[in-house]
Amino acid sequence: MDRVTHVIDPDGEVIIVLQNPNAPFAELSEALTSDKFTYLLPGPSDEIQNFGWCAVHNLSEPAQPPFEEPALEWPVTEEPAAEPAEPTAEPVEETVAEPAEPTKPTAESAEEPVAEPVAEPTAEPVEETVAESAEEPVAEPAEPAKPAAESAEEPVEEEPAELGLTKQPEENCFRIQVSAKHLILASSVFKKILTGGWKESITYLQKGSVEITADGWDLNALLIMLRIIHCQSYQIPGKLTLEMLAKVAVLADYYDCREAIGFLANTWINNLDESIPMTYGSDLMLWVWVSWFFQLPAQFKQATSTVMSLSSNWIDSMGLPIPNKVIGSMNSHRQGAIASVVNRLDKARDGLLSGTRGCSFECRSIMYGALTLQMQSNALLAPIPIAPYPNLNYRKLVQEVLSFTPPQWYGLKARQAHKCPHSCFESLIDTLNDTIEGLGLDNLVRE
Image (tube, rainbow, N blue to C red; front, top):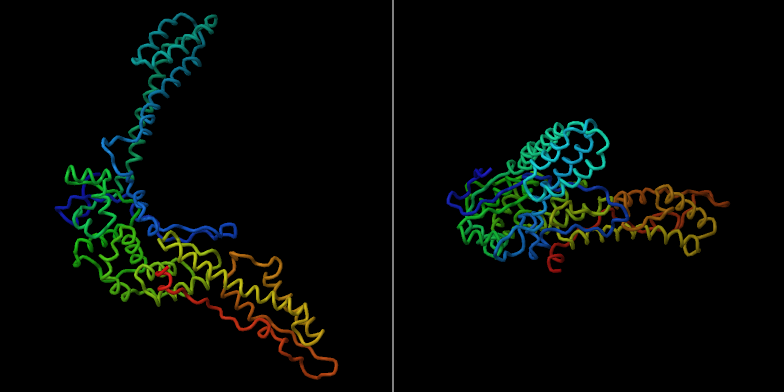
């Protein structure tokens, strides 16, 4: 499919071939368990300087003439030619079953279809089978030879259908005509592709035009970025959805053209209908990414705070190019906050057990038993939660601890409930906040 589907610049020298368009974007992965706590997803922003972008464009290393195809392709063309020779010999052995008169046609028929040196290995098994079965009647081998030849031709007839299947993804692609000069000026990545000594750059310098392959991008997001690069403001929407804004930001990060789209960032963000959600999900992580990329300190702090407070497992980047230091910092703060609550409970139990807390034997015994029972009923005792605290939500944990019910009892001589500084859980555990403070954008940028 060589027809251009979208024209950004009618005189453009570059055709961007977008394959597998509109691939799934920013999907929540499976719940990560404790054995995956060291897992981190590298983002394109961390790899872009070391040519990690070449994989998406199917680019090889810098070209060194002459430009030869990879050696791995040669066996692919030879093996199909050698394989049909083996199945043709096998049916001859199986069909040899009756009278021995037409043995000569077998030699002739074996020689006719083979006109290359490959015929020698095919002739040997035929002679061996005839020699071994000389005493047995041979049944018209010439007749099965024809269906064998026909069967050998059948896969050749099926090949176009198979090739058609492989060509379907190519047909389901978009070809966008753009200007090489605009790409080079706006994007360091496109500049490397077109002038950096790669096969594509040499093709461009020699022929004056070239095709660049991209894979999986959202078509509309790619068109928005390319139109911004080509200064076609009249075709750029002033309002985007949160997901589309995140997709455009991913493209701008990947092709290193943040400055080109930066002037529209405030317009898009101010016109967003979606606010930062108060539940953990894909939209919340999109806000983390957008606020990081466009450098929005307040939104970044709020979004990361909500993520850390509400995530019940290892925080995953969802395939977004959020830097590892941001993902790692969020996971570290979440684990530290949960560990702080668990440690407070353990210290309170140890203090009651050792006698450093509680005003009397009865006070220590009753409070120790009440705390132990409620920790056990909330899965906080046996086994004790350990990092990275799978299936443990910080906010829910704090709310459960704050809901612990202190026991009430009366002394032998007193007529009112016992009260002392250690007879309530608030005094044992201290005050707790069910929200983890968000990350500071400036601090992470400086790191």
